[in-house]
Length: 396
Image (cartoon, rainbow, N blue to C red; front, side, top):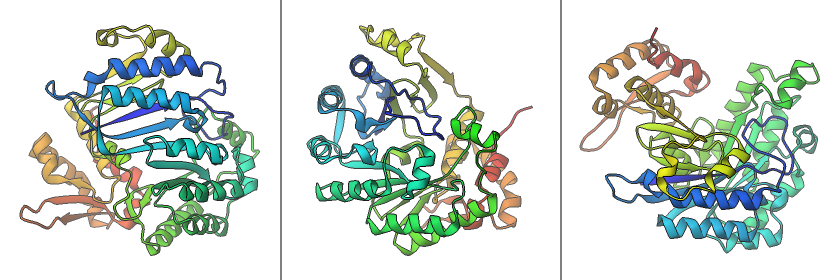
């Protein structure tokens, strides 16, 4: 099985915290869709396993703002996908959307497409903070958008929230989470606000226009989030992600499990199970190069694609970082099968201090062939970055 990620790099306006590759100009949309569909047609072999075509179990259309695309553009994308790939009949097909794009007409258009999962970028229901972030919607628009999508038959909806916003209190955050729960969505992703260098948010902090939330408050918000969602029947299946049983994001889960995926569009990453590659984050360069390709071989040495052949050490480090983000954790039995027992010994040697102080634990799975899993405890979740860093293999 495999997945496909499609990057739509267009936005109406730029949020102050965002460092994803995007542009606010839509004049190149038609040329971009031509290039994107050409890349999809010519890269079908990337996911093949021993010349056997891969079955696509997940498709994720992200950005940017995919909900800016109209019916003609989305039809071209889906026609290309279904004509060139084996899409599983029960594939999870996600499209990211902004609340203000989800008019009645737009929702009807989406319901006619193969899209069966929506990821709606709400971030907060507080209008003052939405203004600060330069989001285009209001809290009221967000609530109406979710309800309209539900009325249109979408039964798998995820919303994004951000905590640790400037001047946000624990009470403010609780209000956001409770409002999200009142909408009866199936999935929630919640991220601590990060100050990425080069963003307007970073510059505003450096110029003392706003103050970053202190660490204790941010941790209290994360703890409150876990408690409220657990009480509401959500599974905390990855550090930032919560889902109702059976409704985890299958696409994002494939990243954490090391399942191969193809990424198309500028800045999109791909992974074939051994090596990584990614398209350069340059829209004009991408369009001019990709739309003129005529055969798959044109991608072999394409100047808009960068590649990284992973060493055994790097593959081990990737497994540590991705697996420990999940509640299941790191399968130590599988780690030994993939890398050898000395890597298991190395991992456990570095994990010992965190096990002893209660930040990591080893659990044995049930069944005929029980396996050992190394995973973060609740307390360890608050220290996850440092713990994972300690388990990485670092050469001098």
